[in-house]
Length: 154
Image 1 (tube, rainbow, N blue to C red):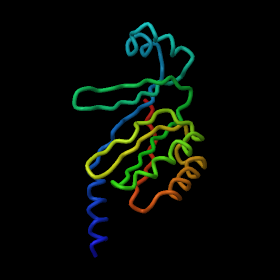
Image 2 (image 1 turned 45 degrees about the vertical axis):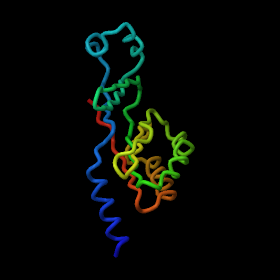
Image 3 (image 1 turned 120 degrees about the vertical axis):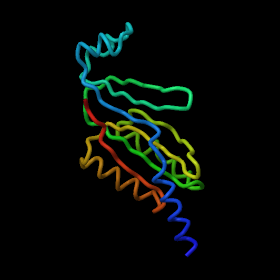
Image 4 (image 1 turned 30 degrees about the vertical axis):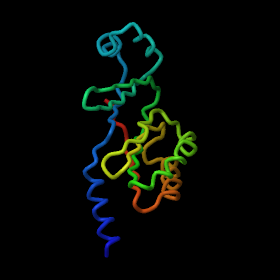
């Protein structure tokens, strides 16, 4: 009975954890080059179709990282790990290197859980994504929550 209550409390806490990053894919056009990236480095984007923008915030600042891309196939992988289960994180870099890792948040402790988020160059609901899901589920225990989300293109 105690084990069930602890697991229930953990999943209640997990629902309260917000994302530690957000991202969009922005189609690049003349306005992007002139208005959105008004710095001299805007020419860096001339050979690309999209700007992949990742936003993360702290109490004191908002950080935006912009990556030029020619693909709209980007997914967000979020993994929520209960405190004490952090050893699984050591396996992520080896697994994710084969899936076009574009950006990683690193590991962040939020209350009693650790959160790891990354963005991969993988098409949503593809065979490649399903294979990755099977690999991650194979190393994870039931208390680890793994979710995938398609990055929105605007």
